[in-house]
Amino acid sequence: MLNITSARRANSKNLELNIAPLIDMVFILLIFFLVTTSFVKETGVDISRPTAATAVSKARATILIGVTKDNTIHIDQRAVDIRAVRANVERALAENPEGSVVIVADKQSLTGLVINVMDACKLAGAQNVAIAASLDQGE
Image (tube, rainbow, N blue to C red; front, side):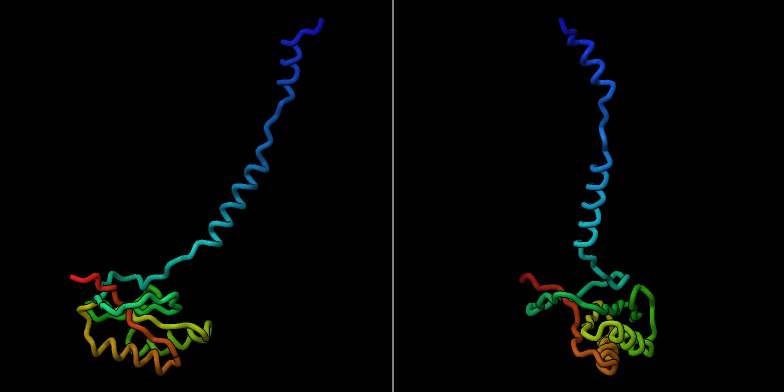
């Protein structure tokens, strides 16, 4: 007669759980999600955007320029002078010639400064220059 209990004990000693394929699958999923995630670039400063009833969504901006209410200009999370805007935009356009520029200006910033930033972008060769605004939801 066969002893079932002793046979089970002998088989359980040889039983192993191989988790290497599971770890591989977790890493593959991690890489997949990192590659497919779109990262949002911001100007690095807190800006209160003005609202506009005709605001439209722009798919993707390569160059973001922030103008704060203190009238400081920020590109890539660092403060720059108005004279350096053109050089920064030229450098960014050299890296990506199809790039577009979005100026994210605070609603309390000086209009003249925003116009000067826009002019510097145009002089740098940017074909698509836009000013960011929040969509007006109505009152």
